[in-house]
Length: 316
Image (tube, rainbow, N blue to C red; front, side, top):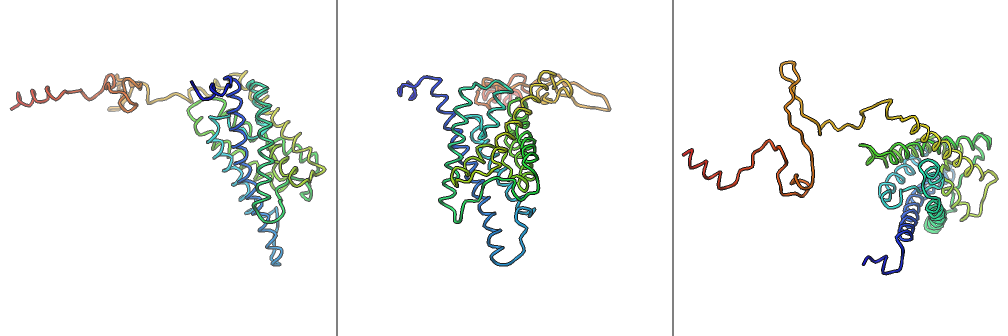
């Protein structure tokens, strides 16, 4: 009997617990690493000012690239780890998009959102306790030269840039799906390149909410870090459903055909010659996959030791 049955858990409850655990751990790891990098970047600016050296603060391209790289890589690594556990969402806006775009159960979504928010608070608290100086990983439009409305719409588009790759690289199954974490991390990376200076690049309500709870500093524009990502989730889900309705794969067909599995062709003297062999892999017929039976239509004949000795004696 499985352990979860001995504990008296139903299959549904067990799966919810697994998903909640995956979202909590993944969100914590993703945000703790990201918060730590932002804290390091903030310390660099602080020490530069103390030394009297010029510092452009948030407008420094090197700092922006450093922060964007940290968020993008941290997300890619943790999505790669946890996408088979919980889906690797780590973001309430992403969870909402999956509910609207492909029918993720609402109960599962609510459980995951709660885990994400708690994990963001814990990540901010641990970063505040472990790293020197005041926690400075909050998000705000103050001093960036844009209005709150502009900040809200910017957050909307940056969130859409993150979620669209999730739909088309991870939700849609194809030959490149195993590389989806890189595309998702890249979406967050380019979003931060644009958003760090203007809004702090929230793109994730949990990312903005956790530090605000720990520091007790809810800025007057905190609302844009919820409304903007929610609008981005709605737009992304709408785009995905529209493309599915239009059967988008017909616009550029045959992109996922595996040319290695069909008949092999060889060109001789300008003519295409079909060698007539087809190759398919299965556990029963392919020794490389664990089987002991040689592959069907193998180009190398299977010769037993006795037959080999007999042929050798005849040759002699």
